[in-house]
Amino acid sequence: MISRPLLSSAFRQAARPAPTFASKFSTPRFSPITARFLSAETKATIDKAVASAPVVLFMKGTPETPQCGFSRASIQILGLQGVDPKKFAAFNVLEDETLRQGIKEYSEWPTIPQLYVDKEFVGGCDILVAMHQNGELAKMFEEKKVYPKEFQFGPRAGITSKKGQFSG
Image (tube, rainbow, N blue to C red; front, side, top):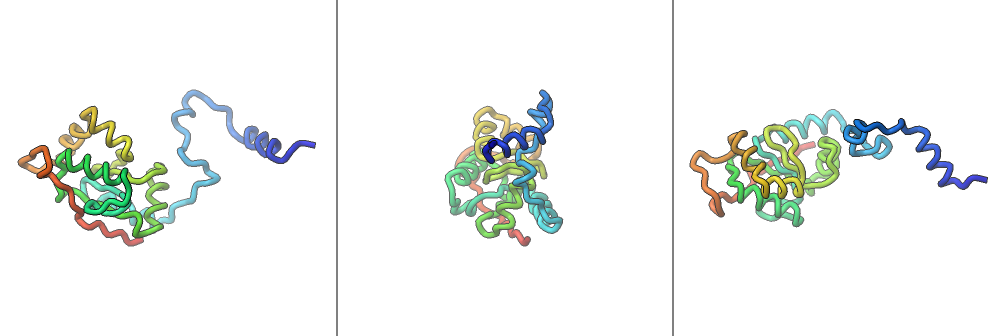
């Protein structure tokens, strides 16, 4: 008699298409079995939030009081980069469970914080750190014109929230 886990594993393998070189790079980050589908209302609300400012950060906590180390690091990087606070919005995912789960499905990125620049998903904290260190983040911010007119590096460029309100 075949054991149940072995049979289940064999069934899943048989149901999957044969992997190709291209499929290794184009497969979804979430399995269709575990993916929850975004409601049209939640998607529209997240679209509106992403479009609310040139630089949008979905984080745990607020810029003034981040509730996790990755969110704190992301805020510090944005401050070091000199992002214009008038062109920045932050959304606290801890205030709304729909937003917390929805943003992960929206971006197909499993972690928070998540940064969007000009409505495009950039990445999470690890991506921000790498882009900050290699200069790509500064180049992108310059191209997208998210710096204040008289830009200066340093602590003067503090980020505070333009209170992003999520209603979903």
